[in-house]
Image 1 (cartoon, rainbow, N blue to C red):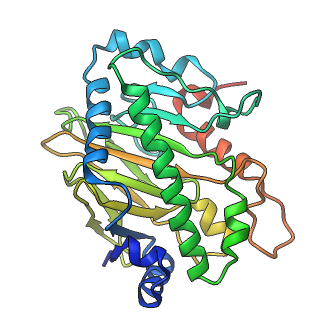
Image 2: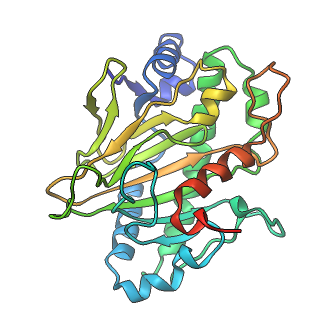
Image 3: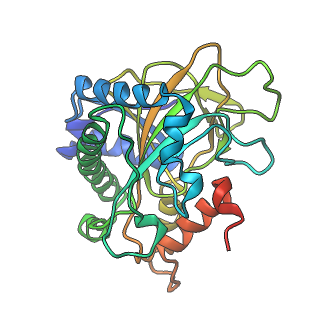
Length: 298
């Protein structure tokens, strides 16, 4: 069962809530948060901004097509990602933006691409990004503290986070879709923590430990939180990354995940192992395996 957690109680270090989250992080890999510091109305405005963008004609979205870049910034058409090499490319559309570092040559800090239309799109997305970034940092600190790690050490690794904000647009499942076609195929997230806002429409499924799938959803104003491969590795599996997917259904849906990842140079090898695995190397390798326009780059 995926627990529903009071975010304010978690951030205030309520011992019973912290223990619930510790168990969820170790045994489930998913939880939902309510009573958060980001109002439902503000999240609804972000969905409206993405919805207006995705409704534009293809020719207008093509101006910020990430396929012409060496990074994952801007619009990705249907079929631009393939999270499972044994499945077809995912049929959803995406729009990615992230943390910029002036002068950096790392794709993980690449400049964002902003469309001219819809009016106010950039402001809405950047404002939400800042708030989601701060909230994700607080949630992650509470979780790592709950599993017995040093909150201060972890916080220090996120002053230039490779944090990616995405708008996902899942159209109605196409009539041509077969057994290998998904809105997003089975995968685990790549980084540390994912803060996922949903539009209330069902579609996300989480793999159960004993097999099979469990649906998970949240109304606008609440969040689904799950954990990625990087945090599982970093914490020596005291936090687990759980596979999930979106098959798609009879109605379209949207989601807005913030993928919260540390600074590029952070060592995310298991703590105390003596190994060095730079966060950027792990993350970029997984990006290069996923985005079709990055798969064949030099």
